[in-house]
Amino acid sequence: MNDRTASDDPFVTHRSLLFTVAYEMLGSGADADDVVQETWLRWAKVDRDEVRDPRAYLVRTVTRQALNRLRTLTRRREDYLGEWLPEPLLTGPDVAEDVELAESVSIAMLTVLETLTPAERAVFVLREVFDAPYDEIAEALDKTPAAVRQIARRARDHVAARRPRVRVSPTEQQTVVARFRSAIRTGDLQGLLDVLAPDVVLVADGGGIVQAFLHPLEGARRVARVLARLPVVAPGARLADLSLNGAPALRIDIDGDLDSAISLVVEDGKITRIYAVRNPHKLAHLGSAMPLSRT
Image (cartoon, rainbow, N blue to C red; front, side, top):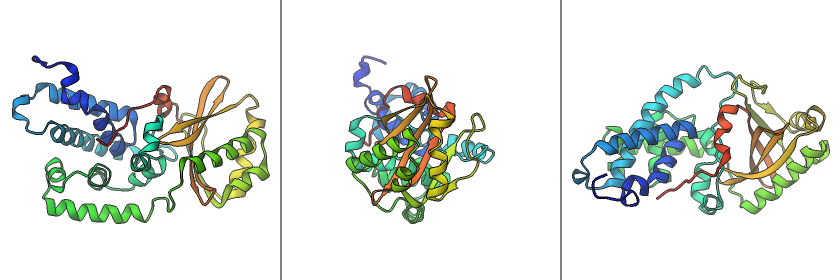
């Protein structure tokens, strides 16, 4: 690396940012890792003296690599068995404290981003989350700034119509998660009905590997009946709090193994959506907290 130390290398400095960009574009920690590695390989070959703005260059490179990967993943996800959910990430308190970052990496937001086209997703992530200039986004996507502005407007409108309506504090979220955890652990049907919104939706992702509902389950009574059976179908299950994607969440362990990661959307003190990731391939990143950054 010439006479530079690793700590001086812009790639090392911005690695958390590059991972965050890739993860928000792909919804997969494993794929984001691959894209960051591909970015490093390209960075290692470039003449650093020719790069005026290393951060912009790296973000542009990771964006292009993520776009290539996203187009492949989009075709693959069309054949996915059952509901597809983003891969959850274990996060530390620093992510929760950055409200905008926490919202942008939430399972709910990543699920909304999945409904955008690859170009719309790239523009939305770079502009709305990382505040990248339109000309830099245009260069990354090989489009004109005017075209990028149109894409950004379309993507903003699309996301605004589908994102959670109310932003809640971590404290309120944690209170609701605690009530939810207690009701599930004891099989308390009424306790679940008290914490679930009438039109709550449960989405589960087993990836065709483990059992999961192939379609969303809707309605408080239907969802509560299913969840209240956990002590019966898995009497040794252990429930524990953790922080997923910047918000309080739950993990369920059965027979000593991680079985499910549960993320919740809370509005007005009630749970409106439950995301249950059971696909074991998507639980691999829950061993240690992932460094996420907007800078």
